Length: 158
Image (cartoon, rainbow, N blue to C red):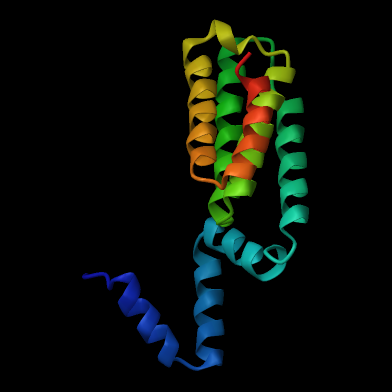
């Protein structure tokens, strides 16, 4: 089966009636959890980006509170799960500010959790990769925003 390009799909969607579009969206939501989450974000949460950010940060913090710290192996598995969740929240929003805020929150919460992530090469590399990703995004922002975020980054680079 040949899959149409995004441009072809866009042109086809423009020609459809509103009722048909609604049916397609509902059908998409039925088949995959991510599609349903994206539709939920677009319909209900995209208008209040700060509320979405607050909710995502609370969810990330909650997940960190449930990390099994008895063994670094279990902690590593849970931290990877939390990072996947963070990246899912980031994927739904197209805002660089929200992406930086969520990644920054993830890194700060990891540092404050008391988990000795520096003892694990995998966890330390995961942390450093997120810091590197934040720096890359900061480099693409306006100079004023760069200054503000670079001040915040000093906390992560200690």
